[in-house]
Image (cartoon, rainbow, N blue to C red; front, top):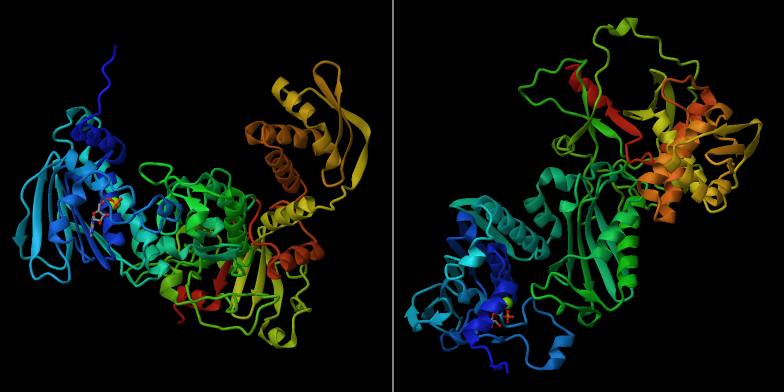
Length: 627
Ligand code: ADP
Ligand code: MG
Protein backbone atom coordinates (compact mmCIF):
# COMPACT_ATOMS: atom_id res chain seq x y z
CA UNK A 1 0.00 0.00 0.00
CA UNK A 2 1.43 3.37 -0.91
CA UNK A 3 1.63 5.71 1.97
CA UNK A 4 0.01 8.97 0.83
CA UNK A 5 1.42 12.01 2.57
CA UNK A 6 1.13 15.75 2.18
CA UNK A 7 4.41 17.23 0.97
CA UNK A 8 6.06 19.48 3.44
CA UNK A 9 6.00 23.10 2.41
CA UNK A 10 9.72 23.22 1.62
CA UNK A 11 9.44 20.42 -0.95
CA UNK A 12 6.27 21.97 -2.33
CA UNK A 13 8.11 25.28 -2.69
CA UNK A 14 10.96 23.59 -4.52
CA UNK A 15 8.52 21.98 -6.93
CA UNK A 16 6.72 25.26 -7.47
CA UNK A 17 10.08 26.97 -7.88
CA UNK A 18 10.78 24.67 -10.79
CA UNK A 19 7.79 26.11 -12.60
CA UNK A 20 8.13 29.75 -11.71
CA UNK A 21 11.88 30.10 -11.46
CA UNK A 22 13.46 28.60 -14.47
CA UNK A 23 16.48 30.85 -14.81
CA UNK A 24 17.67 34.30 -13.77
CA UNK A 25 15.39 35.95 -16.32
CA UNK A 26 12.34 34.48 -14.65
CA UNK A 27 13.43 35.84 -11.27
CA UNK A 28 13.92 39.26 -12.80
CA UNK A 29 10.49 39.08 -14.38
CA UNK A 30 8.76 38.28 -11.09
CA UNK A 31 10.65 40.92 -9.15
CA UNK A 32 10.03 43.60 -11.76
CA UNK A 33 6.36 42.75 -11.91
CA UNK A 34 6.09 43.00 -8.16
CA UNK A 35 7.72 46.42 -8.31
CA UNK A 36 5.28 47.58 -10.97
CA UNK A 37 2.33 46.20 -9.02
CA UNK A 38 3.67 48.20 -6.06
CA UNK A 39 3.27 51.37 -8.12
CA UNK A 40 6.94 52.02 -8.79
CA UNK A 41 7.85 54.97 -11.01
CA UNK A 42 11.51 54.02 -11.07
CA UNK A 43 12.96 50.59 -11.19
CA UNK A 44 16.58 49.51 -11.28
CA UNK A 45 17.67 46.01 -12.22
CA UNK A 46 21.24 45.02 -11.60
CA UNK A 47 22.83 41.67 -12.33
CA UNK A 48 26.21 40.07 -12.01
CA UNK A 49 27.41 37.01 -13.87
CA UNK A 50 24.26 36.75 -15.89
CA UNK A 51 22.22 36.96 -12.72
CA UNK A 52 23.65 33.72 -11.35
CA UNK A 53 25.54 35.36 -8.51
CA UNK A 54 23.44 38.48 -8.03
CA UNK A 55 20.12 39.94 -9.08
CA UNK A 56 19.10 43.20 -7.45
CA UNK A 57 15.79 44.89 -8.18
CA UNK A 58 15.12 48.19 -6.45
CA UNK A 59 11.89 50.16 -6.74
CA UNK A 60 10.30 53.27 -5.30
CA UNK A 61 6.90 51.63 -4.88
CA UNK A 62 4.67 51.35 -1.83
CA UNK A 63 7.04 49.13 0.16
CA UNK A 64 6.20 46.21 2.44
CA UNK A 65 5.34 46.90 6.09
CA UNK A 66 7.88 45.39 8.50
CA UNK A 67 5.31 43.13 10.10
CA UNK A 68 4.41 41.59 6.74
CA UNK A 69 7.87 41.16 5.34
CA UNK A 70 8.18 37.54 6.33
CA UNK A 71 4.67 36.70 5.21
CA UNK A 72 5.42 37.92 1.69
CA UNK A 73 7.69 34.90 1.31
CA UNK A 74 5.12 32.36 2.35
CA UNK A 75 3.63 30.33 -0.47
CA UNK A 76 0.24 31.66 -1.62
CA UNK A 77 0.84 34.88 0.25
CA UNK A 78 -0.44 37.72 -1.84
CA UNK A 79 -1.97 41.12 -1.29
CA UNK A 80 -3.48 41.07 -4.76
CA UNK A 81 -6.30 38.56 -4.56
CA UNK A 82 -8.81 37.92 -1.86
CA UNK A 83 -11.55 35.76 -3.26
CA UNK A 84 -12.08 33.41 -6.15
CA UNK A 85 -14.07 36.14 -7.88
CA UNK A 86 -10.98 38.32 -8.10
CA UNK A 87 -9.51 35.66 -10.39
CA UNK A 88 -12.00 36.60 -13.05
CA UNK A 89 -10.59 40.06 -13.46
CA UNK A 90 -6.93 40.21 -12.65
CA UNK A 91 -5.59 43.72 -12.90
CA UNK A 92 -2.18 43.15 -11.36
CA UNK A 93 0.77 41.41 -12.92
CA UNK A 94 1.16 39.02 -10.00
CA UNK A 95 -1.62 37.19 -8.21
CA UNK A 96 -0.47 33.67 -7.58
CA UNK A 97 1.44 34.58 -4.46
CA UNK A 98 4.15 32.10 -5.22
CA UNK A 99 7.00 34.02 -6.79
CA UNK A 100 8.75 35.21 -3.65
CA UNK A 101 8.34 31.85 -1.97
CA UNK A 102 9.69 30.08 -5.04
CA UNK A 103 12.63 32.42 -5.49
CA UNK A 104 13.57 32.30 -1.82
CA UNK A 105 13.44 28.50 -1.86
CA UNK A 106 16.30 28.28 -4.34
CA UNK A 107 18.56 31.19 -3.46
CA UNK A 108 19.84 33.55 -0.80
CA UNK A 109 17.56 36.56 -0.54
CA UNK A 110 17.93 39.87 1.22
CA UNK A 111 15.00 42.26 1.16
CA UNK A 112 14.95 45.78 2.52
CA UNK A 113 11.76 47.78 2.36
CA UNK A 114 10.15 50.88 3.76
CA UNK A 115 6.60 52.17 3.50
CA UNK A 116 5.71 55.85 3.45
CA UNK A 117 4.40 55.87 7.02
CA UNK A 118 7.53 54.31 8.54
CA UNK A 119 10.67 56.26 9.44
CA UNK A 120 12.81 53.19 9.36
CA UNK A 121 12.71 50.31 6.98
CA UNK A 122 12.92 46.61 7.67
CA UNK A 123 15.36 44.05 6.38
CA UNK A 124 15.02 40.30 6.17
CA UNK A 125 17.37 37.58 4.98
CA UNK A 126 16.35 34.14 3.81
CA UNK A 127 18.48 31.21 2.78
CA UNK A 128 16.93 28.32 0.86
CA UNK A 129 13.56 29.61 2.02
CA UNK A 130 14.47 29.71 5.72
CA UNK A 131 13.88 33.20 7.06
CA UNK A 132 16.06 34.94 9.62
CA UNK A 133 14.80 37.71 11.86
CA UNK A 134 13.31 40.96 10.62
CA UNK A 135 15.50 43.88 11.62
CA UNK A 136 15.25 47.62 11.38
CA UNK A 137 17.31 49.38 8.77
CA UNK A 138 17.61 52.82 7.26
CA UNK A 139 16.53 52.64 3.63
CA UNK A 140 14.77 54.69 0.97
CA UNK A 141 11.06 54.40 0.36
CA UNK A 142 10.28 51.30 -1.65
CA UNK A 143 11.72 47.85 -1.85
CA UNK A 144 15.08 46.40 -2.73
CA UNK A 145 15.28 42.69 -3.40
CA UNK A 146 18.63 41.01 -3.65
CA UNK A 147 18.80 37.44 -4.90
CA UNK A 148 22.19 35.76 -4.70
CA UNK A 149 23.50 32.36 -5.71
CA UNK A 150 20.47 31.18 -7.57
CA UNK A 151 19.97 27.38 -7.43
CA UNK A 152 22.82 26.98 -4.92
CA UNK A 153 20.79 24.22 -3.24
CA UNK A 154 19.42 22.56 -6.39
CA UNK A 155 22.48 21.33 -8.27
CA UNK A 156 20.35 19.48 -10.82
CA UNK A 157 18.82 22.77 -11.91
CA UNK A 158 22.15 24.56 -11.80
CA UNK A 159 23.46 22.16 -14.42
CA UNK A 160 20.89 23.42 -16.92
CA UNK A 161 22.05 26.99 -16.76
CA UNK A 162 23.74 28.33 -19.84
CA UNK A 163 26.85 30.47 -19.88
CA UNK A 164 26.58 33.72 -17.94
CA UNK A 165 26.49 35.66 -21.19
CA UNK A 166 23.45 33.73 -22.38
CA UNK A 167 21.62 34.04 -19.05
CA UNK A 168 22.49 37.74 -18.96
CA UNK A 169 21.12 38.16 -22.46
CA UNK A 170 17.89 36.47 -21.45
CA UNK A 171 17.62 38.80 -18.46
CA UNK A 172 18.23 41.81 -20.66
CA UNK A 173 15.55 40.63 -23.07
CA UNK A 174 13.12 40.32 -20.21
CA UNK A 175 13.98 43.77 -18.86
CA UNK A 176 13.50 45.24 -22.31
CA UNK A 177 10.10 43.65 -22.75
CA UNK A 178 8.89 44.82 -19.38
CA UNK A 179 10.18 48.30 -20.17
CA UNK A 180 8.15 48.21 -23.39
CA UNK A 181 5.15 46.95 -21.48
CA UNK A 182 5.34 49.86 -19.04
CA UNK A 183 6.43 53.09 -20.63
CA UNK A 184 5.19 54.87 -17.50
CA UNK A 185 7.98 53.30 -15.46
CA UNK A 186 11.58 54.41 -15.84
CA UNK A 187 13.59 51.22 -16.11
CA UNK A 188 17.32 51.09 -15.63
CA UNK A 189 19.41 48.01 -16.31
CA UNK A 190 22.96 47.54 -15.10
CA UNK A 191 24.95 44.47 -16.07
CA UNK A 192 28.26 43.80 -14.29
CA UNK A 193 28.49 47.45 -13.31
CA UNK A 194 27.66 48.82 -16.75
CA UNK A 195 24.41 50.61 -17.47
CA UNK A 196 22.82 49.15 -20.59
CA UNK A 197 19.36 50.62 -20.60
CA UNK A 198 17.49 53.58 -19.23
CA UNK A 199 13.96 54.36 -20.32
CA UNK A 200 12.56 57.79 -19.53
CA UNK A 201 9.33 56.57 -17.99
CA UNK A 202 7.37 59.43 -19.51
CA UNK A 203 4.41 57.25 -20.38
CA UNK A 204 5.03 57.47 -24.10
CA UNK A 205 5.39 54.11 -25.76
CA UNK A 206 7.51 55.72 -28.43
CA UNK A 207 10.08 56.85 -25.87
CA UNK A 208 10.34 53.35 -24.51
CA UNK A 209 10.65 51.94 -28.03
CA UNK A 210 13.42 54.41 -28.78
CA UNK A 211 15.31 53.51 -25.64
CA UNK A 212 14.86 49.77 -25.97
CA UNK A 213 15.03 49.11 -29.68
CA UNK A 214 17.26 51.94 -30.68
CA UNK A 215 16.59 55.00 -32.70
CA UNK A 216 17.33 53.42 -36.03
CA UNK A 217 14.85 50.69 -35.48
CA UNK A 218 12.24 53.07 -34.15
CA UNK A 219 12.52 55.15 -37.30
CA UNK A 220 11.38 52.21 -39.37
CA UNK A 221 8.18 51.97 -37.36
CA UNK A 222 4.67 53.00 -38.28
CA UNK A 223 2.26 53.91 -35.52
CA UNK A 224 -0.55 51.42 -35.12
CA UNK A 225 -3.87 52.39 -33.64
CA UNK A 226 -7.22 50.76 -33.70
CA UNK A 227 -10.15 49.99 -31.57
CA UNK A 228 -12.99 47.60 -31.67
CA UNK A 229 -15.66 46.38 -29.42
CA UNK A 230 -14.07 46.09 -26.00
CA UNK A 231 -10.50 46.45 -27.20
CA UNK A 232 -7.96 48.98 -28.25
CA UNK A 233 -4.77 48.24 -30.08
CA UNK A 234 -1.85 50.66 -30.00
CA UNK A 235 1.79 50.39 -30.83
CA UNK A 236 4.19 50.27 -33.71
CA UNK A 237 4.95 47.98 -36.59
CA UNK A 238 7.79 48.03 -39.06
CA UNK A 239 7.52 49.38 -42.55
CA UNK A 240 7.38 46.43 -44.94
CA UNK A 241 10.82 47.41 -46.22
CA UNK A 242 12.25 47.14 -42.71
CA UNK A 243 11.14 43.61 -41.95
CA UNK A 244 13.57 41.38 -40.10
CA UNK A 245 15.12 38.00 -40.50
CA UNK A 246 13.37 36.55 -37.46
CA UNK A 247 10.41 37.00 -35.18
CA UNK A 248 12.62 38.27 -32.37
CA UNK A 249 11.41 41.78 -32.94
CA UNK A 250 7.77 41.03 -32.29
CA UNK A 251 6.51 42.04 -28.88
CA UNK A 252 2.95 41.62 -27.70
CA UNK A 253 1.35 42.94 -24.55
CA UNK A 254 -2.08 42.52 -23.10
CA UNK A 255 -3.15 44.92 -20.41
CA UNK A 256 0.48 45.71 -19.65
CA UNK A 257 1.57 42.10 -19.52
CA UNK A 258 4.12 40.71 -21.94
CA UNK A 259 2.68 37.64 -23.58
CA UNK A 260 3.28 35.17 -26.33
CA UNK A 261 0.27 34.89 -28.55
CA UNK A 262 -0.08 32.91 -31.71
CA UNK A 263 -3.25 34.75 -32.49
CA UNK A 264 -1.60 38.14 -32.34
CA UNK A 265 1.49 36.96 -34.23
CA UNK A 266 -0.69 35.54 -36.97
CA UNK A 267 -2.78 38.71 -37.13
CA UNK A 268 0.26 40.92 -37.62
CA UNK A 269 1.86 38.66 -40.18
CA UNK A 270 -1.35 38.29 -42.11
CA UNK A 271 -1.51 42.06 -42.44
CA UNK A 272 1.89 41.99 -44.14
CA UNK A 273 1.01 39.20 -46.54
CA UNK A 274 2.19 40.20 -49.99
CA UNK A 275 3.92 43.30 -48.75
CA UNK A 276 7.12 41.90 -47.38
CA UNK A 277 9.88 39.77 -48.70
CA UNK A 278 9.52 36.05 -48.31
CA UNK A 279 11.39 34.84 -45.24
CA UNK A 280 11.23 38.23 -43.54
CA UNK A 281 9.15 39.01 -40.50
CA UNK A 282 7.61 42.25 -39.39
CA UNK A 283 8.82 43.69 -36.11
CA UNK A 284 6.24 45.20 -33.81
CA UNK A 285 5.37 46.42 -30.36
CA UNK A 286 1.65 45.86 -29.97
CA UNK A 287 -0.34 46.72 -26.88
CA UNK A 288 -3.81 45.32 -26.57
CA UNK A 289 -6.05 46.76 -23.90
CA UNK A 290 -9.17 44.85 -23.14
CA UNK A 291 -11.58 44.20 -20.34
CA UNK A 292 -9.97 42.24 -17.53
CA UNK A 293 -12.67 39.62 -17.92
CA UNK A 294 -11.97 39.19 -21.64
CA UNK A 295 -8.68 37.49 -21.00
CA UNK A 296 -7.59 34.69 -18.69
CA UNK A 297 -4.02 35.18 -17.55
CA UNK A 298 -4.15 32.27 -15.16
CA UNK A 299 -3.32 29.51 -17.62
CA UNK A 300 0.44 29.32 -17.24
CA UNK A 301 2.65 29.56 -14.15
CA UNK A 302 4.95 32.10 -15.77
CA UNK A 303 1.86 33.99 -16.97
CA UNK A 304 3.31 34.52 -20.45
CA UNK A 305 0.51 32.67 -22.14
CA UNK A 306 -3.03 33.88 -21.88
CA UNK A 307 -6.40 32.77 -23.11
CA UNK A 308 -8.73 35.22 -24.76
CA UNK A 309 -12.43 34.76 -24.40
CA UNK A 310 -12.69 35.49 -28.10
CA UNK A 311 -9.51 34.81 -30.05
CA UNK A 312 -11.15 35.79 -33.32
CA UNK A 313 -11.98 39.20 -32.02
CA UNK A 314 -8.37 39.70 -30.97
CA UNK A 315 -7.14 38.56 -34.35
CA UNK A 316 -9.48 40.93 -36.09
CA UNK A 317 -8.64 43.93 -33.90
CA UNK A 318 -4.88 43.48 -34.33
CA UNK A 319 -5.11 42.62 -38.02
CA UNK A 320 -7.20 45.65 -38.87
CA UNK A 321 -5.13 48.05 -36.81
CA UNK A 322 -1.93 46.92 -38.52
CA UNK A 323 -3.57 46.87 -41.94
CA UNK A 324 -4.79 50.41 -41.44
CA UNK A 325 -1.30 51.52 -40.48
CA UNK A 326 0.18 49.92 -43.56
CA UNK A 327 -2.53 51.12 -45.92
CA UNK A 328 -2.56 54.61 -44.54
CA UNK A 329 1.13 54.76 -44.94
CA UNK A 330 1.16 57.58 -47.44
CA UNK A 331 4.77 58.32 -47.04
CA UNK A 332 6.48 56.75 -49.91
CA UNK A 333 8.73 53.83 -49.41
CA UNK A 334 11.17 55.79 -51.45
CA UNK A 335 14.76 55.96 -50.43
CA UNK A 336 16.71 59.06 -49.52
CA UNK A 337 20.28 59.87 -50.20
CA UNK A 338 22.65 59.13 -47.40
CA UNK A 339 24.07 62.37 -46.06
CA UNK A 340 27.83 62.44 -45.97
CA UNK A 341 29.21 62.40 -42.47
CA UNK A 342 31.55 65.31 -41.83
CA UNK A 343 34.64 63.18 -42.22
CA UNK A 344 33.43 61.30 -45.27
CA UNK A 345 34.79 62.09 -48.63
CA UNK A 346 31.97 61.34 -50.95
CA UNK A 347 32.61 61.08 -54.61
CA UNK A 348 29.62 61.80 -56.76
CA UNK A 349 29.58 58.31 -58.11
CA UNK A 350 29.29 56.75 -54.74
CA UNK A 351 25.88 57.89 -53.77
CA UNK A 352 24.23 55.57 -51.35
CA UNK A 353 20.52 55.26 -50.95
CA UNK A 354 18.65 54.40 -47.85
CA UNK A 355 15.44 52.52 -47.83
CA UNK A 356 13.55 55.15 -46.41
CA UNK A 357 11.79 55.00 -43.28
CA UNK A 358 11.32 58.69 -43.01
CA UNK A 359 10.12 58.96 -39.48
CA UNK A 360 6.50 59.07 -38.80
CA UNK A 361 6.46 57.13 -35.62
CA UNK A 362 5.30 60.26 -33.90
CA UNK A 363 2.90 59.45 -31.16
CA UNK A 364 1.17 62.78 -31.56
CA UNK A 365 0.32 61.95 -35.13
CA UNK A 366 -3.36 61.48 -35.12
CA UNK A 367 -5.46 60.29 -37.95
CA UNK A 368 -6.14 63.89 -38.83
CA UNK A 369 -2.57 64.96 -39.24
CA UNK A 370 -0.69 64.13 -42.35
CA UNK A 371 2.52 62.24 -42.48
CA UNK A 372 5.50 63.77 -44.15
CA UNK A 373 6.04 63.39 -47.84
CA UNK A 374 2.50 62.85 -48.75
CA UNK A 375 1.96 62.85 -52.45
CA UNK A 376 -1.71 62.47 -52.83
CA UNK A 377 -3.49 62.34 -49.55
CA UNK A 378 -6.83 61.51 -51.05
CA UNK A 379 -8.92 62.21 -48.02
CA UNK A 380 -6.56 64.07 -45.80
CA UNK A 381 -7.29 67.37 -44.13
CA UNK A 382 -4.95 70.37 -44.29
CA UNK A 383 -1.38 69.41 -44.71
CA UNK A 384 1.16 70.09 -42.06
CA UNK A 385 4.48 70.42 -43.66
CA UNK A 386 7.25 69.95 -41.22
CA UNK A 387 10.45 69.25 -43.07
CA UNK A 388 11.97 65.96 -42.09
CA UNK A 389 15.04 66.80 -40.11
CA UNK A 390 18.03 65.75 -42.13
CA UNK A 391 19.73 64.06 -39.24
CA UNK A 392 16.75 61.87 -38.66
CA UNK A 393 16.35 60.84 -42.23
CA UNK A 394 19.87 59.65 -42.56
CA UNK A 395 19.51 57.29 -39.68
CA UNK A 396 17.54 54.88 -41.76
CA UNK A 397 19.15 51.54 -42.38
CA UNK A 398 20.87 51.28 -45.71
CA UNK A 399 19.29 48.73 -47.90
CA UNK A 400 19.73 49.91 -51.42
CA UNK A 401 23.06 50.84 -52.85
CA UNK A 402 23.30 52.42 -56.19
CA UNK A 403 26.61 53.10 -57.84
CA UNK A 404 26.33 54.74 -61.19
CA UNK A 405 28.91 53.49 -63.66
CA UNK A 406 32.12 55.16 -62.59
CA UNK A 407 33.80 55.06 -65.95
CA UNK A 408 31.25 57.06 -67.82
CA UNK A 409 31.72 60.78 -67.32
CA UNK A 410 28.41 62.53 -67.05
CA UNK A 411 28.43 64.36 -70.40
CA UNK A 412 28.90 61.14 -72.27
CA UNK A 413 26.13 59.40 -70.50
CA UNK A 414 23.35 58.21 -72.74
CA UNK A 415 21.02 61.03 -73.56
CA UNK A 416 18.04 60.86 -71.31
CA UNK A 417 15.20 59.42 -73.33
CA UNK A 418 13.14 62.55 -72.97
CA UNK A 419 11.33 61.92 -76.18
CA UNK A 420 10.01 58.65 -74.88
CA UNK A 421 8.28 60.13 -71.96
CA UNK A 422 5.82 62.91 -72.40
CA UNK A 423 7.27 65.68 -70.30
CA UNK A 424 3.97 67.46 -69.94
CA UNK A 425 3.16 67.96 -66.28
CA UNK A 426 0.36 65.79 -65.06
CA UNK A 427 -1.87 66.75 -62.21
CA UNK A 428 -2.27 64.02 -59.67
CA UNK A 429 -5.50 62.87 -58.19
CA UNK A 430 -7.85 65.37 -59.84
CA UNK A 431 -10.68 64.29 -57.62
CA UNK A 432 -9.32 65.76 -54.43
CA UNK A 433 -10.78 68.87 -52.91
CA UNK A 434 -9.64 72.20 -54.22
CA UNK A 435 -7.85 73.10 -51.02
CA UNK A 436 -5.88 69.93 -51.11
CA UNK A 437 -5.16 70.37 -54.72
CA UNK A 438 -3.17 73.47 -53.87
CA UNK A 439 -0.93 71.23 -51.84
CA UNK A 440 -0.44 68.85 -54.69
CA UNK A 441 2.68 69.31 -56.66
CA UNK A 442 2.54 68.45 -60.31
CA UNK A 443 5.00 65.84 -61.41
CA UNK A 444 6.51 64.89 -64.70
CA UNK A 445 8.59 62.11 -66.12
CA UNK A 446 11.96 63.49 -67.10
CA UNK A 447 13.59 60.34 -68.35
CA UNK A 448 14.45 56.74 -67.80
CA UNK A 449 17.72 55.22 -66.65
CA UNK A 450 19.06 51.95 -68.01
CA UNK A 451 15.62 51.17 -69.44
CA UNK A 452 14.75 50.29 -65.88
CA UNK A 453 14.24 53.32 -63.66
CA UNK A 454 11.72 55.97 -64.51
CA UNK A 455 12.87 59.42 -63.37
CA UNK A 456 10.08 61.55 -62.02
CA UNK A 457 10.52 65.12 -60.96
CA UNK A 458 8.14 66.69 -58.51
CA UNK A 459 8.86 70.02 -56.94
CA UNK A 460 12.18 69.84 -55.20
CA UNK A 461 12.59 66.14 -55.43
CA UNK A 462 13.18 63.39 -57.88
CA UNK A 463 12.06 59.79 -57.71
CA UNK A 464 13.59 56.83 -59.42
CA UNK A 465 10.87 54.29 -59.96
CA UNK A 466 11.72 50.67 -60.61
CA UNK A 467 9.33 50.04 -63.45
CA UNK A 468 9.32 46.30 -63.12
CA UNK A 469 8.70 46.30 -59.37
CA UNK A 470 5.93 48.86 -59.68
CA UNK A 471 4.26 47.15 -62.58
CA UNK A 472 4.47 43.81 -60.83
CA UNK A 473 2.55 45.30 -57.96
CA UNK A 474 -0.07 46.76 -60.27
CA UNK A 475 -0.56 43.35 -61.84
CA UNK A 476 -0.70 41.67 -58.50
CA UNK A 477 -3.44 44.00 -57.25
CA UNK A 478 -5.36 43.57 -60.46
CA UNK A 479 -5.15 39.76 -60.31
CA UNK A 480 -6.06 39.75 -56.68
CA UNK A 481 -9.21 41.79 -57.11
CA UNK A 482 -12.36 39.85 -56.28
CA UNK A 483 -13.92 40.47 -59.66
CA UNK A 484 -10.84 39.64 -61.68
CA UNK A 485 -11.79 37.99 -64.96
CA UNK A 486 -8.80 36.63 -66.83
CA UNK A 487 -8.33 37.54 -70.45
CA UNK A 488 -7.36 34.31 -72.09
CA UNK A 489 -5.68 33.11 -75.23
CA UNK A 490 -6.27 29.76 -76.87
CA UNK A 491 -2.87 28.36 -77.69
CA UNK A 492 -2.59 27.65 -81.39
CA UNK A 493 -0.61 24.57 -80.63
CA UNK A 494 -1.41 23.19 -77.20
CA UNK A 495 1.73 22.98 -75.07
CA UNK A 496 2.58 19.50 -73.84
CA UNK A 497 5.25 19.26 -71.21
CA UNK A 498 6.62 16.78 -68.73
CA UNK A 499 7.37 18.40 -65.40
CA UNK A 500 9.13 16.67 -62.54
CA UNK A 501 6.82 14.22 -60.77
CA UNK A 502 6.30 16.46 -57.73
CA UNK A 503 5.59 19.49 -59.87
CA UNK A 504 3.14 17.58 -61.95
CA UNK A 505 1.36 16.41 -58.89
CA UNK A 506 1.04 19.80 -57.30
CA UNK A 507 -0.22 21.33 -60.54
CA UNK A 508 -2.70 18.51 -60.94
CA UNK A 509 -3.95 19.18 -57.41
CA UNK A 510 -4.56 22.81 -58.31
CA UNK A 511 -6.29 22.60 -61.68
CA UNK A 512 -9.30 24.56 -60.47
CA UNK A 513 -7.15 27.34 -59.12
CA UNK A 514 -5.22 27.46 -62.39
CA UNK A 515 -8.47 27.58 -64.34
CA UNK A 516 -9.65 30.49 -62.23
CA UNK A 517 -6.68 32.47 -63.56
CA UNK A 518 -7.04 31.40 -67.14
CA UNK A 519 -4.90 28.28 -67.48
CA UNK A 520 -6.64 25.31 -69.00
CA UNK A 521 -4.41 22.42 -68.02
CA UNK A 522 -5.14 18.71 -68.16
CA UNK A 523 -3.24 15.61 -67.31
CA UNK A 524 -1.84 14.03 -70.43
CA UNK A 525 -0.76 10.45 -70.30
CA UNK A 526 0.89 9.26 -67.14
CA UNK A 527 3.53 11.90 -66.70
CA UNK A 528 2.78 14.89 -68.92
CA UNK A 529 0.44 17.88 -68.82
CA UNK A 530 -1.24 19.63 -71.71
CA UNK A 531 -2.06 23.33 -71.74
CA UNK A 532 -4.72 24.47 -74.20
CA UNK A 533 -5.41 27.92 -72.92
CA UNK A 534 -3.41 30.46 -70.95
CA UNK A 535 -3.95 33.94 -69.55
CA UNK A 536 -3.25 36.71 -71.97
CA UNK A 537 -0.82 38.23 -69.50
CA UNK A 538 1.58 35.37 -70.07
CA UNK A 539 3.31 35.20 -73.44
CA UNK A 540 2.55 31.97 -75.33
CA UNK A 541 6.24 31.06 -75.37
CA UNK A 542 6.40 31.57 -71.62
CA UNK A 543 3.48 29.37 -70.61
CA UNK A 544 5.46 26.28 -69.69
CA UNK A 545 8.05 28.26 -67.76
CA UNK A 546 5.34 30.06 -65.90
CA UNK A 547 3.60 26.86 -64.92
CA UNK A 548 6.88 25.37 -63.77
CA UNK A 549 7.49 28.40 -61.59
CA UNK A 550 3.98 28.23 -60.21
CA UNK A 551 4.58 24.59 -59.35
CA UNK A 552 7.79 25.50 -57.52
CA UNK A 553 5.92 28.17 -55.58
CA UNK A 554 3.10 25.82 -54.67
CA UNK A 555 5.60 23.25 -53.49
CA UNK A 556 7.35 25.60 -51.09
CA UNK A 557 4.53 26.76 -48.89
CA UNK A 558 1.35 26.78 -50.80
CA UNK A 559 0.39 23.21 -50.50
CA UNK A 560 -1.42 22.97 -47.25
CA UNK A 561 -2.81 26.45 -47.32
CA UNK A 562 -5.12 27.36 -50.22
CA UNK A 563 -4.81 31.11 -49.75
CA UNK A 564 -1.01 30.90 -49.73
CA UNK A 565 -1.26 28.75 -52.86
CA UNK A 566 -3.32 31.43 -54.53
CA UNK A 567 -0.89 34.15 -53.52
CA UNK A 568 2.01 32.15 -54.89
CA UNK A 569 0.28 31.83 -58.19
CA UNK A 570 -0.50 35.54 -58.22
CA UNK A 571 3.11 36.40 -57.47
CA UNK A 572 4.35 34.36 -60.38
CA UNK A 573 1.77 35.68 -62.77
CA UNK A 574 2.20 39.28 -61.67
CA UNK A 575 5.91 38.99 -62.24
CA UNK A 576 5.53 37.27 -65.60
CA UNK A 577 3.09 39.84 -66.83
CA UNK A 578 5.18 42.80 -65.70
CA UNK A 579 7.34 44.89 -67.95
CA UNK A 580 10.94 43.98 -67.29
CA UNK A 581 13.87 46.10 -66.33
CA UNK A 582 15.97 46.50 -69.46
CA UNK A 583 12.99 46.38 -71.80
CA UNK A 584 12.14 49.37 -73.89
CA UNK A 585 8.85 50.85 -72.79
CA UNK A 586 6.66 53.30 -74.59
CA UNK A 587 5.71 56.64 -73.06
CA UNK A 588 2.20 55.57 -72.13
CA UNK A 589 3.48 52.54 -70.35
CA UNK A 590 5.93 54.60 -68.32
CA UNK A 591 3.25 57.13 -67.62
CA UNK A 592 0.83 54.51 -66.39
CA UNK A 593 3.38 53.00 -64.03
CA UNK A 594 4.57 56.35 -62.75
CA UNK A 595 1.01 57.46 -62.14
CA UNK A 596 0.24 54.41 -60.04
CA UNK A 597 3.26 55.15 -57.90
CA UNK A 598 2.65 58.87 -57.67
CA UNK A 599 -0.99 58.55 -56.71
CA UNK A 600 0.00 56.19 -53.93
CA UNK A 601 -1.79 53.09 -55.15
CA UNK A 602 1.52 51.29 -55.49
CA UNK A 603 3.97 51.34 -52.63
CA UNK A 604 5.82 48.05 -52.50
CA UNK A 605 6.35 45.30 -54.95
CA UNK A 606 4.64 42.09 -53.85
CA UNK A 607 7.93 40.95 -52.35
CA UNK A 608 8.20 44.05 -50.21
CA UNK A 609 10.95 45.75 -52.14
CA UNK A 610 10.51 49.48 -52.52
CA UNK A 611 9.24 50.59 -55.89
CA UNK A 612 10.89 53.98 -55.75
CA UNK A 613 13.78 55.81 -54.20
CA UNK A 614 13.87 59.49 -53.55
CA UNK A 615 16.50 62.11 -54.20
CA UNK A 616 15.96 65.74 -53.27
CA UNK A 617 17.46 68.80 -54.83
CA UNK A 618 19.03 69.56 -51.48
CA UNK A 619 20.65 66.15 -51.35
CA UNK A 620 22.13 66.71 -54.77
CA UNK A 621 23.35 70.16 -53.89
CA UNK A 622 25.08 68.73 -50.86
CA UNK A 623 26.70 66.01 -52.90
CA UNK A 624 27.96 68.53 -55.40
CA UNK A 625 29.04 70.84 -52.58
CA UNK A 626 26.78 73.60 -53.85
CA UNK A 627 25.02 74.03 -50.56
P1 ADP B 1 2.11 37.97 -6.02
O1 ADP B 1 2.87 39.00 -6.77
O2 ADP B 1 1.54 36.93 -6.89
O3 ADP B 1 1.13 38.55 -5.08
P2 ADP B 1 4.64 37.39 -4.84
O4 ADP B 1 5.15 36.18 -4.18
O5 ADP B 1 5.33 37.85 -6.04
O6 ADP B 1 3.12 37.15 -5.13
O7 ADP B 1 4.61 38.56 -3.79
C1 ADP B 1 3.92 38.38 -2.56
C2 ADP B 1 3.47 39.70 -2.01
O8 ADP B 1 4.60 40.46 -1.58
C3 ADP B 1 2.76 40.59 -2.98
O9 ADP B 1 1.39 40.29 -3.08
C4 ADP B 1 3.01 41.98 -2.42
O10 ADP B 1 2.07 42.28 -1.43
C5 ADP B 1 4.35 41.83 -1.73
N1 ADP B 1 5.44 42.38 -2.55
C6 ADP B 1 6.34 41.67 -3.29
N2 ADP B 1 7.22 42.48 -3.89
C7 ADP B 1 6.89 43.75 -3.56
C8 ADP B 1 7.44 45.02 -3.86
N3 ADP B 1 8.50 45.18 -4.68
N4 ADP B 1 6.84 46.11 -3.32
C9 ADP B 1 5.76 45.98 -2.50
N5 ADP B 1 5.21 44.79 -2.19
C10 ADP B 1 5.76 43.68 -2.69
MG1 MG C 1 4.53 38.60 -7.85
